[in-house]
Image (tube, rainbow, N blue to C red; front, side):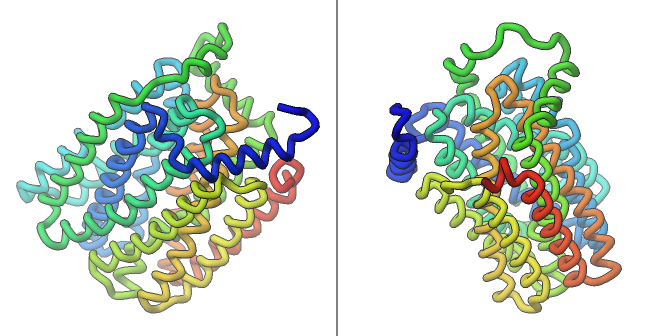
Length: 422
């Protein structure tokens, strides 16, 4: 590369990214990982919608609904440790183990659901066990992409990976709601279990560490798991751009995701007076927007200034949620959720690409694990949102959350403007 023409080289690379949106599929491992992640995401969404509606109907409590949602993210506390384990034994092996657990737990719900012995306490117990593992799935997905996909394709690969979650929230939500409403929870869970099982088989075809990246690893490492975790945390603390991204991720999970994800069953049933199918349509609207955002990022090859683009997308996300909070009918709410999904997707893709590009391979599992630790803001935010909705009403609660989110995002962008904004 000529030192005198960096701008031309950058433009050439970006143009190549735009014209090769599907280039990551040239990597054999990615051809296995993408459908495996897709089916896992479908199963996640079907399971969350089915059990969330079951809990709401059986208990008639928004607080218990948010408690159920919170349990699914309990494992964020141990994600950094799982990241250390993955750095040691291989991220593919850890991901295969996790997806085996999903399949077993789905069977554990399907059998009593068929027998008519399922109850809310049992569902909470299964959600607790699943919640210890599920938050780390994204850690392993993104880390494996960083291991196996060349750096020049990362924006496209992360965008394609995001489509597995976004499309799942459309198809998974609609399929889960339709099966649950038509056939009942037992038959619906056959589909959930089958999706997990097929995803596990596909995961076996995913590669481990990229050969070149593995060769670049240092020959010495800390001798204990805790030392490795401490080294990863120290890297986050001492790297300003990584620290700023972690704080942004925490605030988004604390104040944005609880509204756009966790409280949708409440909105559907209590505000719009909808059934399971109506809930599925709302989720599909939000996820359809996220899919549009992912496709836009794939086709563009990513933003030219990803830090600035990420901050502006997050602020727009909050502004749209304030408008959503005051809607009283389904279709205006659906339209705004579509726009919310676009902003959410573009912001989070930009954040993931920046993290993967600036994180050394030997720290990747740990750093992405710490990134998921930021998701712990979601269960905390969900529990607080449930109580706040009971106290002030949905619209006021969302307005409070979004104003707090905008203030915190602005403070982080201002304090670390040298490494994020510029």
